[in-house]
Length: 129
Image 1 (cartoon, rainbow, N blue to C red):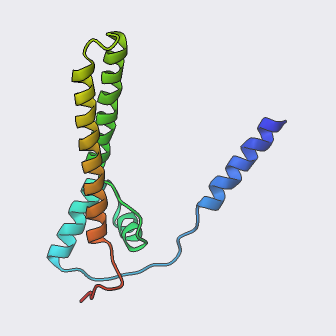
Image 2: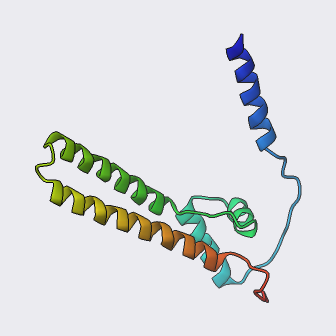
Image 3: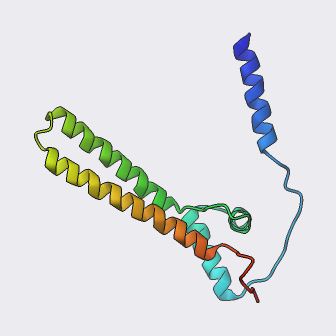
């Protein structure tokens, strides 16, 4: 019985997270602006509506490529940890350096993604023509 109640609660949570989007905003872009948005859409894997909504509301948008690279870095870090454990630390200096390098690259990639989003976000101080 508890499982059934839990499933109903999960369904209710999902329904409250979805809100009906019934308002529409239309605006014009120059060719260069449209090209930039089209490139961003392709990189992020989002529709025009989703990309515009997230950008205007200040939600961080990460590219699929960046997410794939971060996922691969995590996988490689796990493999290095496995090598370290299996060899009982025989290559500890090498694996430690490799993990340190992977971590540094992952942090740099995360920061790059954050700074890119901040530079493209609409801020109240900016004058938009």
